[in-house]
Length: 156
Image (cartoon, rainbow, N blue to C red):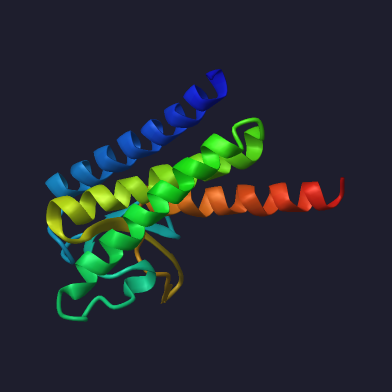
């Protein structure tokens, strides 16, 4: 039971930090105007994304909000089941918890405003990566955990 608690602490931490940062950026910047330069590679900008990763289907006309919401809800249910079934596998379930927290962070945005708030802009010179947020970062880190876990099990 303590392991399940650890996983849900991870989920709640990801959601809390994600939502707080999105709220802070939304209160201090106007979408697509203004920027806070962090260093030579990172900026803080405010972008509203009605699509999925890399703004996939962002201009699809509105139906994508319901489509991506349904996918996120199904993913949340699936992740909860996986965490419960694999709770003894700490690294694997921690990765799932990061993904779950990120999925819920973006789902909250989509349910509340219909779009996901992105604000981290990474670039090298004039080459810019699409904006993202901390929920996206948690999802990416969770996937990396799952990949590393898979490699470690393959070597067992």
